[in-house]
Length: 177
Image (cartoon, rainbow, N blue to C red):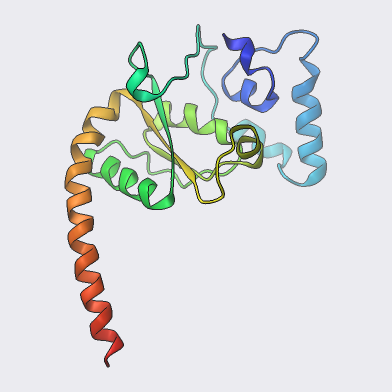
């Protein structure tokens, strides 16, 4: 249910979910605190990607267990895994071309839906709320792009394995010079 997203005012904003009247001031309070801390500048807020309309329903599930086709897929992974997924999305022609996003993490979902695959470093709020490790980041992909990226991933992983061996050989040559 959309109201389950009320605990993060910024996430409610990026997902275009109106807070209940008693919680509505939280968005302004949270942004004011972020402005005062120098974390976000007021002129940045209009540039934050946002869903164009409130979702009718929100369902989070492991990809293999989702009962419906996902609109967006969120991968929490180590940077090496994110690299492979990012390279595969480029090969599949679905990369957004956007720079890696920082804060807020929740903007990566509407950004991906609007533009293609996105890398996100994960903001501090998301890291605290979700337990995302210091050695992890996000790769975000439109659900409709998943088959093309999965197909490209086998080529990318094979190429990376071969390039890994090539680079190791080159590195050993450089070490003897």
